[in-house]
Length: 615
Image (cartoon, rainbow, N blue to C red; front, side, top):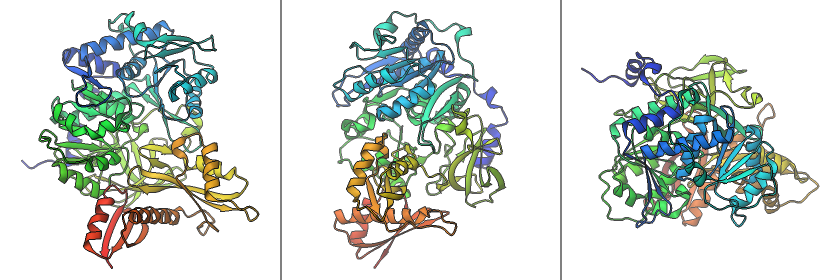
């Protein structure tokens, strides 16, 4: 019997409805299932330092669920009800897991990137009307502690603050209680929640903040149905890994780290090894990564292109990595050279998936035991539909033919329940049923999706969405600027970095360094502060007077490559162009083969297609 094609396999899976196939309807069900099926298995291993001699903390599934129940009961003792919001401002810790999953059991979890500027965090907390905040401490000698003191003064809805480090401090706002997290949950019952108190599938489980187009946070509403569906699909895709532990250094304020790399492991009884509170930002995490892969006999781990590039550059060690077979890349486009180099060096299979906050983490993935060409992200997941279409006035003008570029639209049980602020939903839906991803791509005859660019202008820096308007508005507030455009410049470390092009008024003499200083003062989102500002006599425009960004992206790409080559004494001619099917393409002419080998090594993680030729 011949092997089914991917589309045939997906159709075969869908003969049984997902309601029948997937038995867990809520995230609380997932943990109850884990405790019932794998009570003595280790659920979480927590490395604080990631040094090789560290003795980590461990939690079994039975203990994890008991602590989740205790945490949920604590929240209820605070008066938390189903639609109340519990915000989590923590690095990667066991308490982060307890907070996130217990919040969903009795209310709505709201994980927040604690590295954001405090003004942005306050905006999010006020948008969701947070009732409870869990954080590390109130220690004002720490950056996070300072932020928490500002938050307490700026979020009127806040009633309770929980601290995980055991320290206590006085606060001026007497309306807010301050409680030690671990001491408080220890006094609560560890029994499972009574059935009437458990969440239902249609209840909102999480509020995730995501990049927007209005210069303020957009809050995506994910239901228990959305998350539990994706978790069971993802666990099914990974079933052939058995119960191999997984190293997770992805942030727990991002859907990739929370849903794919954590909850989808828990449902299968797998151990999640938390690699320090700082994740990949801790130097020990990367330095000792392969040591821990061997120690825990890891066969698969989730990662992002930036980290793959760094892992490639680690010094060689005699570590037996025969256990390691698969790397799953996400959060940003995966350059083909990086994919091939990583696969060859570590003798593994590398796949690139596709998803976003609004899809509960997952839109497409390479199916197990199937291959794709290039950097295709595979097929749309079961029970969902993905099309490339021509969209005019928020309506489908026509569905694109096979291999024809179009806007990627998706619908299915993975798609979120809309944005919290109703005004943000305008334009998000096409024909009132398809979610507009804002990405451009082609779909071939096998259903494989190849992303070719973005219809949206979001800048994605290391997986962090940046709205260009934030940068442009700040620059336009400068008296010397008459026009400003921000774009993403390709970068070997972060995928993209924000840069800006400005035109000055004729009366003022302003230099780039002054404008950069202005941005540092006026842009609250640190990641959005441009790395470079270039002053132009005029901006390129289209026939209808709009700024023609592809030319600026070409210029930024050429600047990035030339700057990289200059630091390594490589002489080359660099020309960049945007191809609607291939995305950003860089043509590089070099004088000798040795330079080409070095250039290829330097650009292995460069997020564009590179073509080489000789002068």
